[in-house]
Image (tube, rainbow, N blue to C red; front, side):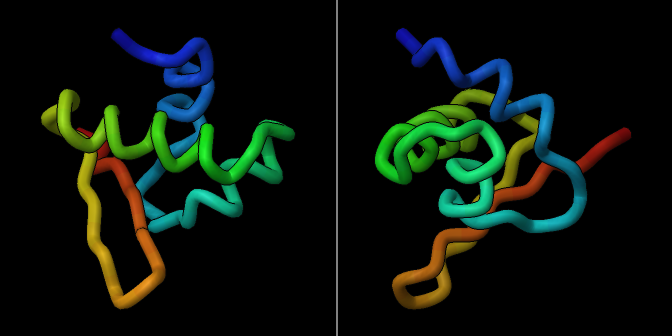
Length: 64
């Protein structure tokens, strides 16, 4: 299972940490949709990382 936005979200990720809000603005989708796609990617992709700092969620990718 995955959202139709996962591939788009995955493509825009880099070593630079991003918030779901930044992803949502870039792809013109809701914050909730972006957060759901990011969380699913963080749990299923080995090169995806996630950090929760209080209420702020950060996601990034380790490029090889």
